[in-house]
Length: 397
Image (cartoon, rainbow, N blue to C red):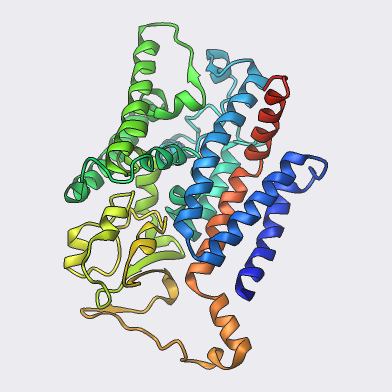
């Protein structure tokens, strides 16, 4: 209880800074702050991280779309992306294309995405800075905890209690496809010096912004966007219970997977405690655990793990846990060498036990990951709530 209170107090400061400061006269901002603190408290108090993470992520996806569309109508009167908007570089920058812009920027010194460099809620500089901090802390945990696009797949994947399609045997092929598509998009964008993913493959145009349909090419692109959304974001998650677009087509996700060794946190699987039930593989929404992971006692999911905690929640033997990479015990053939909970001077007395609990990897990770959730949602969720309230009151978005 004391640990929960400690982290909740600190989270209150995070919520204040990113969601409430400067808006204390707004009921929507107070509602947002109260909801986020209640959500975080339930998460760390019950240790049901994956459950409350899902509640946040699905809600954030829907409310982000409401807010983002409203902002577009405020700024340009439409969701349509006109040639003038692109030419003036006023397109909100999308984190998904961060890996796509890096090589062209290194070679030409130019950002191929037509966005503002600074001074906007979705500027290139701001988003890249947030991405860098996330990369060295939660890594691909961004995808599992804070991505406002992934929340759509998260929601659709939960519509059925049991999936109709079993995918565990195909996990390796899905991962290979993901990396292959990243390589294709990087090569195409570098060759054409344009954001090929945004122009042809992004399935989230329906819930953000889209190019004006002015000719046959833009019509084909629109059909592709709609088809990819319906197939990869709606249909396949319903059928498989997995986040299929995130795990097969998103260049940001595969790029973060490659960078995952740089991150502070990871998930470990203790082969000695594992009973081989494969519940973790079936629960993993990112295709990161398969039969080889368990039978060969690899001790961890594949590097495309998004730290969502689904495997941690379903493991009946407690063999799966969060860990801090620099402090993780070395693994041998028999699995990780465990350190006794009572080892070290920090374990002595009530204060020592409190400190030891405070420094548990799962608490530290949940606090860090949820901080990014607050950072990315603090503007959009209160704005969406305000717009919905106006609509219900008979106004306009």
